Image (cartoon, rainbow, N blue to C red):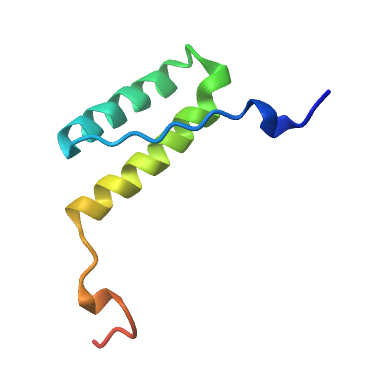
Length: 71
């Protein structure tokens, strides 16, 4: 039957933050619509990737976030 990873497709897209937010909204809507159940895992992965990327841009790690935190 061949290996499962033979048919893996990689999609690495770069876009401005505004487009990233819009894409995330679209993915959320597509997931909630349940119109494409086979893509649910793909949508979930996209949500994770996009949220992480957007969060990184909006809340960039500061020097303080590395190493022990002092309160």
